[in-house]
Length: 174
Image (cartoon, rainbow, N blue to C red; front, side, top):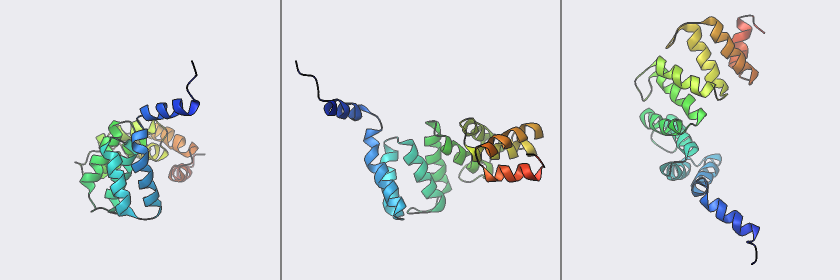
């Protein structure tokens, strides 16, 4: 019996991959976005998002936030970020937290923002670590703790977050 050609096995494996179904529209959306064709990017991201592609949902949310290629809508952005966040995409968890923090497209809730920032911060999203630090520092949505705030600022700074570095410098902490 002849063995299967490697190319055939690879294509069979790729065909079974859940990402394979999304590669076309998502990649097309990225190319359109890079070309600043936001209408086309939104169309392709929507196709991939409808199939459950978390990064496409996130990127579609970003388009809704800025009204690029779609009518600006914080509610639609929150919906898309929420879908991606439920799938565990850290950057979407952070963006959704920002919307909760400011009450854009969702009911304002510093507590919910803190929860989302914490989930993303634990996955090394520096902006989430910085945002969480500020909520701790000012006691917004969780108990005030300057000590915990500094811990999160140091983590964000270690990952290169310039805002965290500036904040630590302002506190006189290296």
